[in-house]
Image (cartoon, rainbow, N blue to C red; front, side, top):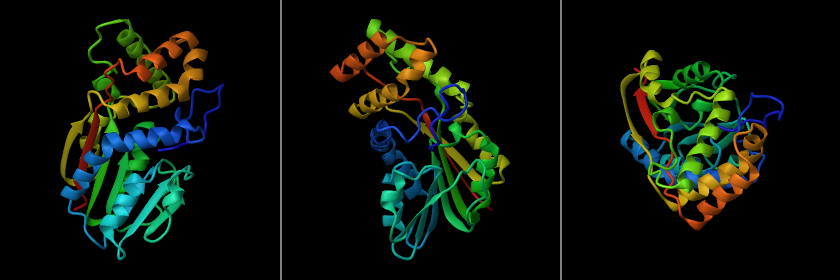
Length: 271
């Protein structure tokens, strides 16, 4: 999910806005890390030609274009976000890109066979409204797949904290998560999604979780994320410029085994 750049004097707003050049790098890395898991779940739900799909908080275009390939010329893929600057490149054919705030706006249409949001709701202020909008947009028998992080379940970026570089990485990650929490992110949201899907009236709810322990994409994601938030970390007294430069040098050198928060995937069907 993307949001306007937050006011530097405010603790409200999304920390990782699309206006910065690092956003595209982050989308690419997130796609490399999590697209295979997402696609596996969607395949298991039975996606086929002709399906009507809504990708919420599309961000980049990798999931959108994959969905379009699966639904074919008789299907439809609606991609929404409050900042469509990155997803708009995919518009055309069966793909429609629309500016929309799922935390405030009603569902643009209804009758979807499939609705999906990945790493979106943890950042949305009115998560309850967003989940209601997505569940309510399903046709009877349609599936909702929500995939979201649970940073509180696994707070470290270096699981093996065996030296000062790893300790610094974990301290910077703790600072980053404190900034997220100050802006309303629910760092324990992922674990709640199965229950929330049931409370939204969905049936056949199930869930699993995935996170990589180390990969080149984790390094790319960390470097881009730290560059996006470095000013915030310094302004809040959570790190110095020297510490951030030292951490980025360690990441670039490949000396850290970096992981991510667990991504919990939960799905349910409208009766």
